Image (cartoon, rainbow, N blue to C red; front, side, top):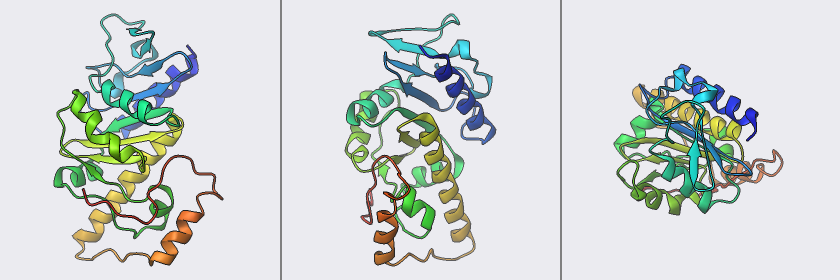
Length: 224
C-alpha cells in the first residue's frame, strides 16, 4: 500500500475539518488503489486523523495500524460508486453547510447561472432519502452516478467522486461555493439569471479543451 495515499487522505480530511464541512465525526473519504481501498475510519473526527488511523481494505478484510479501527459505516456507499463507475478513483462524503441546506430542503442545484459550475459540475440532483450505512444509500445514488460527479443526498449531505482525491475534493469545494453564492442571491431577494441555452452548450463543449474528467449532464436538468 502506497504511503502517499495515506498522507493524501489525512491531508484532505484535515482540510474538510478546517472548512467546516462536518461536525464531530461527520464525513468519510476513500481512495481506490491497485490492491483495494484506503478509507477513513468510523468514529473519529477528521481533524484528529493520523496516517495510523486510516483503514486499508483488501481481499475481503481490513486492517489499520491503530487498534479497533473500522472502515466508515458509509463505506458501502463508496463501494457502490466504484462498482458503478470504472473511472472513479476517490469518493468524498461531507456535510458542507450551504450544500447540505439545499439537500435538506430537497432543492436540487439545477439552474445554470454560474459559468464555472456549468462547466465543471452541470446540474446537481437530490437523490431519494435513504437510511445511512445501509444498502438503500447505494440504490438511491446509483442511477444518478451515470451522469453526475456531484450529488446532494436528501436530508443528509453531499457526495462527490473523481478520478483521484484532489478532483473529488475540488468538486465538493465547487459545489459548496455554488450553494453559498445561490444562498446569498436568494437572501438579497434576487432570482438567479440563467445563462442562455446556446451558451450553456458552448461551455459544456469546452470541457474537452480543459481535459475535464468524469461525467456531466450537459444542459439537462434533474428536479429530483
